[in-house]
Image 1 (spheres, rainbow, N blue to C red):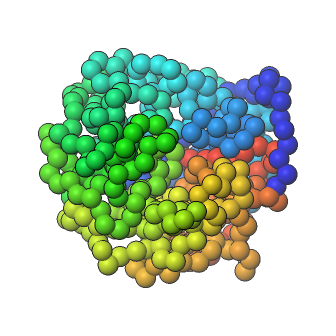
Image 2: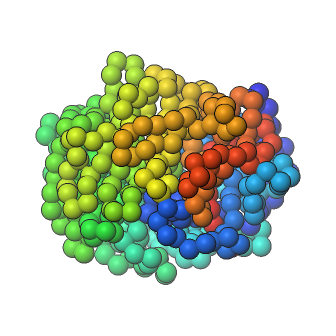
Length: 423
């Protein structure tokens, strides 16, 4: 796709607030799952499309991000265009926690948790909670929902030598409790990784925290071992198990803790799947790991993504034993705007995968290494692409295994995220 340069100030003059931000997909447990008996949500939700200006967004990229709300993504819709419409995210970032119709974040350069929504074409702050004991920085934290009302946020502290946590009442944003994990620095490590990946397995009632240690702070710091898995009791936040894994070096999404991309998912049985990778030369070789229900470590006999040709970035459970993955087939230095990423349908039992295809033709490579353009709703996956020649939606029917073309999206912007939000 040939990208148009849109002057930023000119773009701002034509942009107005839209009706909603994203919901349901901040962590994999919150995503409507077509394969697990979720209720029919037709007419109760709509879609939000996140488009960035200048370059792809995420991790501080792009000049600004605009959100466009649409009721449908089927092919009979007019072309979707954000020019002259949409809501500007500033001062919020694309890395958001969401549930229902509300959005939660530590905004840029602020010392508070914020709960907000967008109503009547304006952002409305619902509640704000200043930090009390533990402090967090925008984008640099991970989270899990313990139930519909309890939000847990975790991250390394300012010196990155401890892991701090805060439990919030999501209804009024009051702090329920906060503290520090009894988690020692990994062997030979000077600091913890900033964020890590936190997830709550409701089938077993345990938190799983994936993290690693580095020899020094900053981007030049090197991991001192493969990543570790800590199993935590959510009621008292006590660490029950803490192990170095033997299968992969690093988990995907470790810099933003699933605020940006879905790196953890679950099947109906409660088995946990994690996207991970190991750097081999210039290649980040992806793998899909599994922790079986009731276990605390990865199944050494399992790899749901064998013979990877690059980093596995995201994984989403579709139902019927299938998952949708987003991966790249280039070396570790591939930029965020490089057309090197593709979608596959994976059989989680066998590891067999096939490129997403429509009418017998494989969907082309997309750009956007930090993008999350897919959601699962009512037994269908809505999958956005950002190829050199097309920006559009494909709709995959999980039960039938058939893909059809959906709505077209105007080019000239950078398609970064697709979300589902309650009406």
